[in-house]
Image 1 (cartoon, chains in turn red, cyan):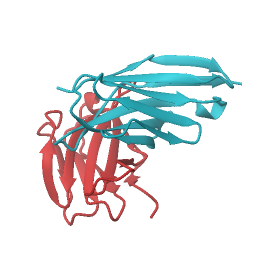
Image 2: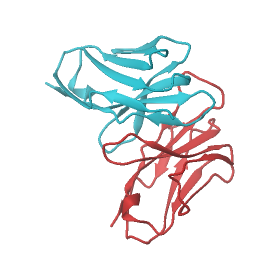
Image 3: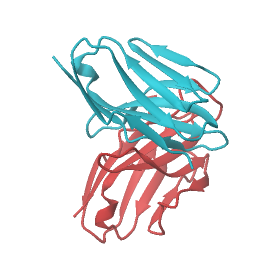
Image 4: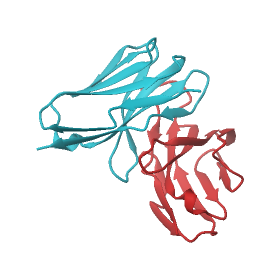
Length: 115
Length: 112
């Protein structure tokens, strides 16, 4: 297992366009999380899945944002009608169901620039 | 609402120094606390995780301590190296919740 994978690494889009990001978690992890990080700040929680169920969504996740994890494996995060304020690093993480000594494992992130 | 603060915001030291990074949190009802490293433009790498019942964890030159009652954790880096230059983030997971709450990080520069 190579860890948490995110694709693409970088995305530049024009304001108003839709974008979709993908995250492949560690295969044996049933919990998957999305975070957003702006420059100079710590990551902020967006949403999390246990298997295919989306169990929590932050108020940061406006109606333009939607996340799915259709088969409890990979997840997608879609942003519709992008705005310049959506420019950020989008981080995906996964964790096992049972407590462990390893906690979260993060991916390398997708850097979104809205121009 | 859990709030996490990290001090200092930035730190510059010569190679070989021992250093301490501080993290404080407002709600002591935590499940665990995790320290991460982030290189510029990259994702997060987990360094150490301390469960709420533990007082400290060690990995190589890194030692993290936790004082839950006072809402504090420290990350001690021994014999710092230029390769340690990065941003160090502290994050807490509250009991009963899955999300992590992050501090804004300490940006460390170790010069040769």
